Length: 207
Image (cartoon, rainbow, N blue to C red; front, top):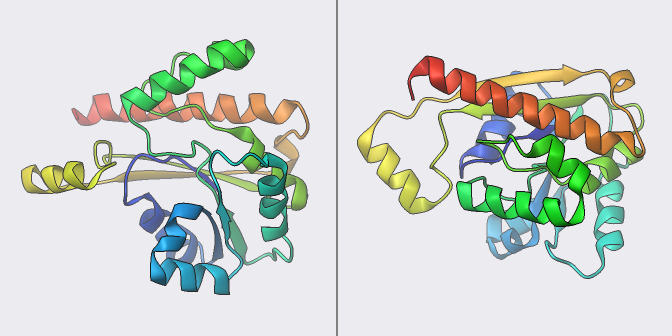
C-alpha cells in the first residue's frame, strides 16, 4: 500500500483502512526515529515491520531490510509505506523538486506540476514489490488533513474547524505495475494523478 503523507494522522488512517475496512494484517515501514517511542519500539519489533534510517550511508542495507519485511507476506497481509518519506508541505515540495531537477531531470519533468503532494522516492517501494512479486498495489490519497503535519498545526486546525477527511483507495492489479526501470515512471504518474485529484476535490469542496 502506497500512501500519501500529509499529516500526523496518516498512520492511524492507513491502519484503520488496512485493518478495519479491508481486513488485512498491516506491516509498516517506519522511520528509525520512532524506535525512541517505547510502545512503537516494542510492538514494531514484535511484528514484521521495518524501521528505516533516512539518510543512511548504506542504502542497499535499508532496501534489503524492506525486502526482508515482505517475506512470508500472505493473502491477508498488507505492507504499508509512505513513498514521499516525509509529511508534505510547500517547503519540502520545492526542495525535493529542486533536487530532482539536478539529479533526475526526466522525473522532474513528470512531477513539476505537483501542488499538494511531494515527489515519491521509488526505491523503497520497488524493493518491497520485488520481494513480493504476486502482490497487488494499493494507492491511498486523502484530502482535508493538509496543514496537520505538525503538532502546532494540528492544534490550530482542531481549534478553528471540524476536521473531515476524504479518503480514496485504489487497487492496481500487479499485472498493470511494471518492474525494473518502468516502475519509477509508473509511481510518478500515480502521484501526479493523486495530486490532481486532491486539488480537484479541494476546489469542489471549497477548502
